[in-house]
Length: 188
Image (cartoon, rainbow, N blue to C red; front, side):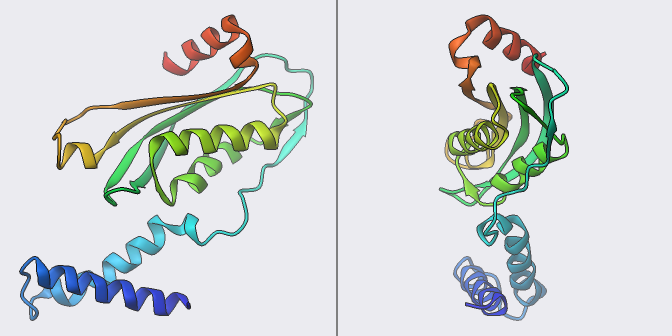
C-alpha cells in the first residue's frame, strides 16, 4: 500500500468518525481536519514504517568503568489501547564495556521506539534491551516517568498522575550497590 493510499484511507476514516460524532459535513472542521489528522498520524507513527533500527555510533572506551547517566530525555508516544498521548521523560544509565556510545544516539533510540503505538512497560524494555545488546554494555538501566492521557482524560480521570517504570539489565541486576547508585543518579 502506497503512502498516498494510506493517507487517503486515514482521511476517510476520520471523516467517518466526524460524521458519527455529529460534525456537519459542510463545516471547516469536516473539510480540513481529516487531512491534518492523517498527516499527524504519519509523523507520530513514523516508527511503524522504519525498517532499520536506529544506528548506534560507538567509540573505543578510553578506560571509563563507572556509570554514565543521561536524564530527562523528553518523549511522546501514543497508547496502543486508546490512541491517546503518553508523554514524559526517559532517563538512562549505563556502564560501558569495550565501547562508549555517541551520546546523541541515546535520545534518537528513545524517539525510534516511541514513534509507534506503545504501552510504557514495552517501551521501557525495548530501549533497555536494545542499548544493552547494541552497546555490549556491562549494565543498562532505563527509567521512564510518564503521563497517560488515557488515564487522565477518560476512565479514572487521574489528573497529573505519573507512571514510573524501570528496566534493569546486566551488572545493575547483579550488584545491588551499583543498582542503588544508578537509581540515585536517575532520580535526583
